[in-house]
Length: 188
Image 1 (tube, rainbow, N blue to C red):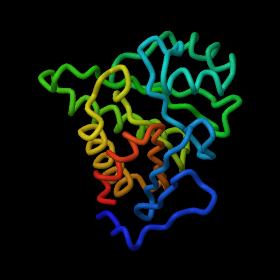
Image 2: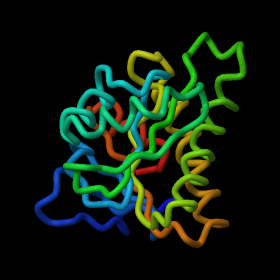
Image 3: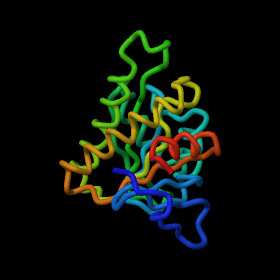
């Protein structure tokens, strides 16, 4: 259950970082600067970089990330692969390929939920205790942000109840629009 606004903890010196629940945080920041065990890359199927979050992660991690991604030979939709973080503060990057929004007629909600579950599974397999997520599929893949935030939060809460290895989930929102959607979902 979400905390009430009066019980939220703001961290001094952060860019809108809010502790929402014991293990869930919401922040408006560049996720490439977060000090967590793993960040999730909203990747495309090639894993070779792109725009948005994907491009920012590749730029911040350096050319070594691209070299490792080339060896992975891509990734199917709703699956994920793990690489080192290289020049990022995060030890790992979990590359997740979310679904393309087609109006909700092609099972996109379940596909997106499955994408989050895959990320949590890969996190546990790699000893990740702290993980940061962007709004997967909400950029060029066109998923409605509020709908996607509801799925992301639901899956994070479910994972935190059953996967005791994961201690903290951070939703890193790059834009105010995404931050506001997650705030609504988390009842802030």
